[in-house]
Length: 277
Image (cartoon, rainbow, N blue to C red; front, side, top):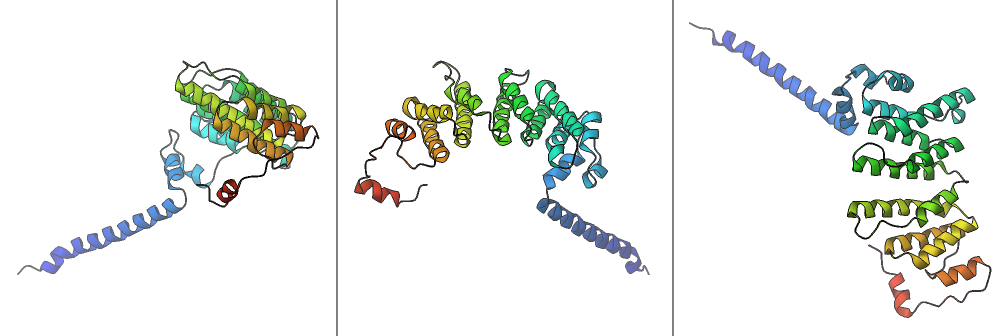
């Protein structure tokens, strides 16, 4: 007589092990989902897979020097912290600036350029802001139109993030630049508008007369409603004044002349209580 318990016991054990393994995999997947699953698998399946590097990240400078993976080098550049504000020396500062500036201007991988731009935007050194301006003004890099637009706009945002108090006139130039011709592709028109929006927003941090006058000029002459609205917001932030979007009122106020601000009608006052969606 056959002992069926002996036949099926191994299968039962295998099933039990399979269920336990499935439970472990499910738990791991939940943990990864809560703690950056995408980052883990990006690292795990990178062209230069190094799982040990995920749990113990290598020195960013070594990654920049040795890696051939553009995304990993870009992330390493973006992670560089300004030495003089983090206990480093002037020599460290010069080396980091040289690495990031060279990559932002000339690297053949767009991810490296974007990472270098992000790294420079963390610096308060005036050289970082100047390097970002040069990246913005150097023309289109040899990448796709989407990458080129991204690089220019990220460089512009980078100058804004550095908070350099001497760069107001740079943002004035960008805010006043003419738009593309009417028959230009819509992508070019949108890119120019986005750049102007970034510059107008940045001008909220500058109180120089040229910056304020540019905002008033845009409030008066700019045809695009979004740009006019952004200019009005920046004027209020830069001046600390709450005035209506009227260029003549703003000019009089900034010149120190008395202004006659029209009182809102009851309809406008009532509308002020309504939420903005």
